[in-house]
Length: 412
Image 1 (cartoon, one colour):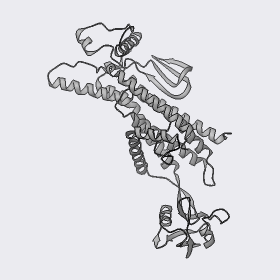
Image 2 (cartoon, rainbow, N blue to C red; image 1 turned 180 degrees about the vertical axis):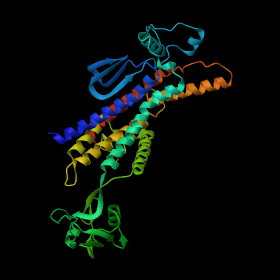
Image 3 (spheres, rainbow, N blue to C red; image 1 turned 180 degrees about the horizontal axis):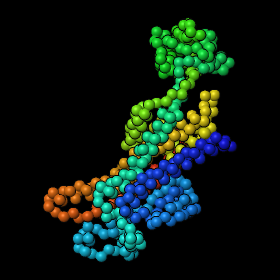
Image 4 (tube, rainbow, N blue to C red; image 1 turned 60 degrees about the vertical axis):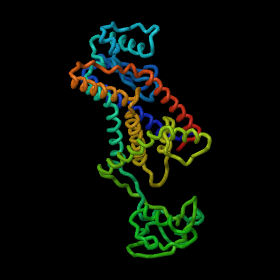
């Protein structure tokens, strides 16, 4: 039976996911409205509408399935091709027996006709299109930084120190050399062998180089006095151990350190996206029991829920509600970084595809001005609809694979 902590953890992360997507869409809507573009609909969630309120030209919805959201911006596609516009051909609105591209243009024309007093998106100058479509991407980048700052700079992270908090006995573990040697909670490790140590990482790295079954010289401070003992190292679970547990101290990183953490997270996420086909293949093999030690793979909303359950139910003498909150914020930071990096991909239907289309429009217009030619207007993004459908199909397939994998071979 699922515990209350696990349930609360799942709900917190799912609500954080909805909030992140809702703010992403808000990042598109606000600049669109600022530039006078029509926004007929803004929704949090999918499926049937549970609540709807019209404010000005926009209807705001809360929908039944709280796994995302969307904003509908008027006239994302120009309703005719460049050639049709040059010939003065009438805009087609009859969707019968039209190609996929023509049907997309016809649907855009029909939608634009419903809101004659609103400005279509395709009529904006190119740089305004970039601002609107990059607004959601930038919002996710900001949220990734904000959540990281809250987690590591405001709340802080409990990190191990050189002071001992527990010394397991031989009745509790095979790695009980420290207990046999007389080390006690409160002792502060000063040196391992001939190496002076300043952190828990120094201790673990020094112990890991020692041979199992051999004594290690440990210098420590107790009640202000320096003492030294020989502690036998034991190989346990593939690691050399001496049987001590560190004390934890909450430390707060500087804003610069938080910035560095976000940069490292960006590099790791970008690497994962670049190697996405390989990562997906690894995830498929994990469903059949292979490559289970590989954790550098993507997860679905199911995996996010599993992470929420783990954080919410985490127990231990040093774990507080602040640690759980920091854990939730760290996961949400990683989620927003993933949304940021993924939407940088320059393919429709992702935001990056729209940004590239607007940049192409701007470059083409500038080049035609240099050549003394007139600007031909908005880029005909409808021509990319077949590619958009193909990319959307691949994204759906990826989602199915990850959801199944998170059920069959959970990483958490």
